[in-house]
Amino acid sequence: MKDSNPLYDLSTRKQNIARHFAQANDYDQHAHIQQHICQYLLTCVAQPYQDSVLEVGAGTGQLTQLLAATLQSKRWIINELCAQQRAHLQSILPTAQLRIGDAETMDFETNHSLIISANAIQWFDDPLRFIPQSSARLQAGGQLLLSTFTPDNFLQIRTLTGQGLDYPTIEAWRSALDDAKLSQIQLSIQRFDIPFARPYDVLKHMKMTGVSTNQTQLPSTVDEQSVATFRWTKTRLQQFEREYWQQFSGQDENGQPCVYLTYDVLIIEAYQP
Image 1 (cartoon, one colour):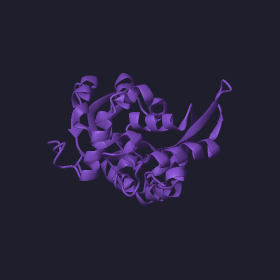
Image 2 (cartoon, helix red, strand yellow; image 1 turned 90 degrees about the vertical axis):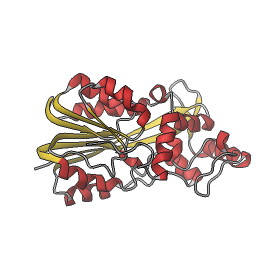
Image 3 (cartoon, one colour; image 1 turned 135 degrees about the vertical axis):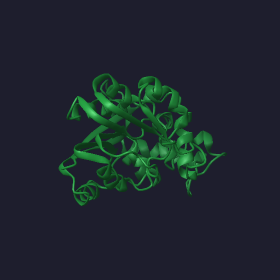
Image 4 (cartoon, one colour; image 1 turned 120 degrees about the horizontal axis):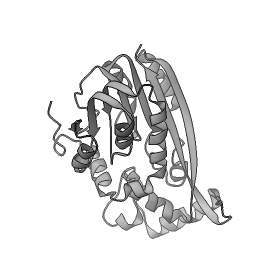
């Protein structure tokens, strides 16, 4: 089965997402929370021996490396939106089938014993639709294991700018899982409040982890890009920094003044009966 063309088969929005992540060259150096989530997901995998594993949205391979080192599977299928990651991902799992393209529209194989995705499906146009799609691709007894984020993720950015991704609620996820007739459903939230020395460092961190694709561009791109109706200006940046200190500041573990950025992570686990 051929890959979707990594450029022409993507919507404009997905091309922009792929471009931002391709430019996040230092992603792994800054994505510590994402790495922690991958390690946690690995502990939730039910069986070390699998018939078929489908990983969706592999990115730089943070989870892929953990899976390759820990699990044995008769078949591996690794999906990633960004074509630049192909060679790196293939080097992690030389026997894997690499499927480069939009996971929302690709025609994946069925009969998987494990479908797993870390920190990716929030970028989908319709994240909830991934649940019935996955249900149809799981074998009997197969496990679905996902991490995504709640509406409280990056709450500081949404509060101060009104911008951000539309994250489904935990109730919406539970409803989708119930509608798909999946069993042993478990939903849990992990919250991380990360300290930064100043608000500008928050924006820099978001850009380094590819997250500036969501309607909050760093000021350095003010003259080149605008997303929706939001555009950084010098005045808006000054207001952002002032209000950030007023509403979301505290002290770090060393007693130094800091501001916080919240990661609110949702872990989803379910099984095909």
